[in-house]
Image (cartoon, rainbow, N blue to C red; front, side, top):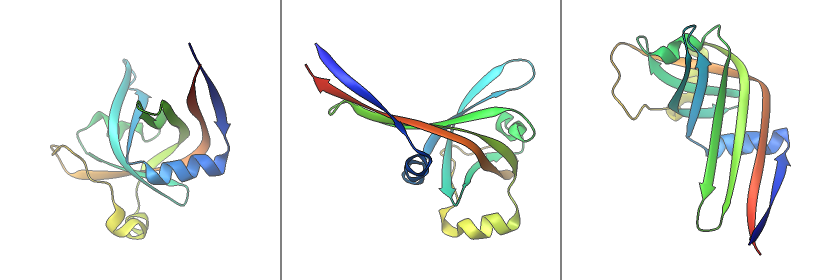
Length: 135
């Protein structure tokens, strides 16, 4: 039998974990249904930047409710963390893109349509770390 622990993370820890992550999922309401999509992202100074295309459903999170979740797990050591972000999404400004410079996120998939960068300003961030202990 195994026992484990769940530790709530403070805001600073959540933001540090967002810095090391590169992959997340975004859940949002399309109006007809709930959608959940994987994204590559970059994080810096309170802004999460994602890249999508003009024709992607992901571009509709501007002015909609959404939640982003980044996580990591290690099956060998039975540890992991999860950070959940709620915020406001806008089209990234030229200044924001310049601030990210070479750290702009790249999509793993070639998308149809023009590339669009979405900037997510964090309103609420929460996280937890889990660790399994052999029993």
